[in-house]
Image (tube, rainbow, N blue to C red; front, top):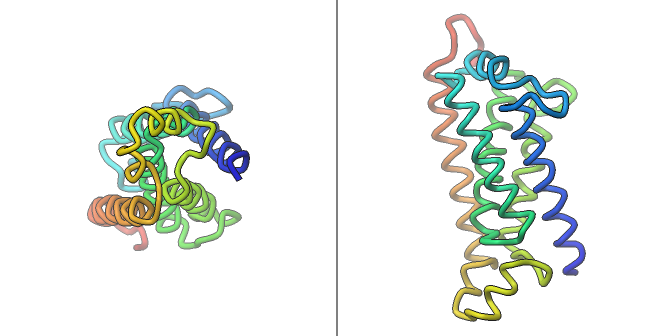
Length: 176
């Protein structure tokens, strides 16, 4: 079980780290800050550069948290919230849920993976496990049903807030 959780943390952490670098730095065949800023603005996320930086920093911090298994619910919440926003924004822009039509399918899957980690916790091979050995009273805050549900609510609220912003800032003539 713990091996599976470790693999999930590593996969999601690496995907988020690369995703952040693509967006902000142009690494890994990414578009970089300037081009992504224009794309964000077209989606209604303005001003573009600060929004790209906010998304990239959030994804990078979530990635580090998940890779280390340190304060995993916070990393999971950042991952789930950011990816829920990305999924909803993509779906709204494309008019489709499906990734083949440039919809939100893939970011939604990443958001759900973050939520899963909030429910399971980081597992035995993590800094959270060491933390709970030293401070057993921290255990209830590092995973479980209540933590997972809190992350679901937080991700949903962040997506709702950003969607409201996007809908209010969409260029004239663009479908809603």
